[in-house]
Length: 320
Image (cartoon, rainbow, N blue to C red; front, side, top):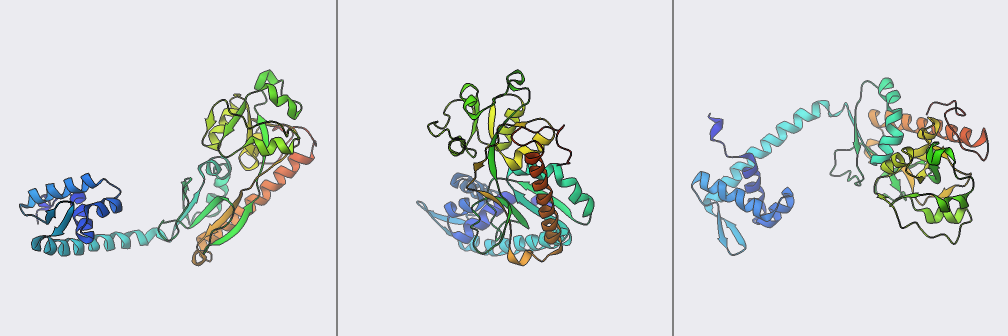
């Protein structure tokens, strides 16, 4: 067998999809490419084989007799390849734990704590997917998702993991260390903005009912980048408790004032019902809820040791 005589795999995949749908457009949608790319691949395949696989009538295409026979054989070959690949992957899939979550939450909350899970559970190969896209458990190869939302996920196992609040924070060195002392002092400093953390509800909670949502300055699409800008002294950021407390405990950020802003969204632990009893999901669930309990203690200590003032690493003696 001379494998050098095989056509390009992309051309074979394009032909199989187009033959199955008898449509270049639907094949393109399935393969996430353009209609032109599918058409080009199939023309190149026809030229290589020296036969016409499709009869073309304007925008309509129809398999020729040769094309129909070839499609049946190609489909069987691709199915065999897919089955072989699935069997190989199944060998280690039971050891893989795939967890999906928001990029900002993964970077600022999970990653600093993850070493304890890996140390306690060496039998699981953890794969952390940092993405803002919602998980489709029927399609995506994901065991668990942690999502920041309203908690309405029909057909799935859903548990409230962590309540969220918002508050202003900045670098301890911001403005030469001359930090705002009252909410009204924010009128004279740069307020950092993002799509997720809106200042308007916090203004209301602080009694600044006439203040509008800030319209000027950089708009950060990612909350982790917003937090980094605050750490770098670029201004005052309205931060999520979950993302900011690690930086506050380490002394890189200072919480301003003692006013919490409400959050319409909370963090939820989500998985398919049939996955809940698997050992790897149970291990992760136990770990993450324990970490949330420790996190709450950290926050309570930060709020009670010196009420009404900011916290730094000098006043916090709890490891985040």
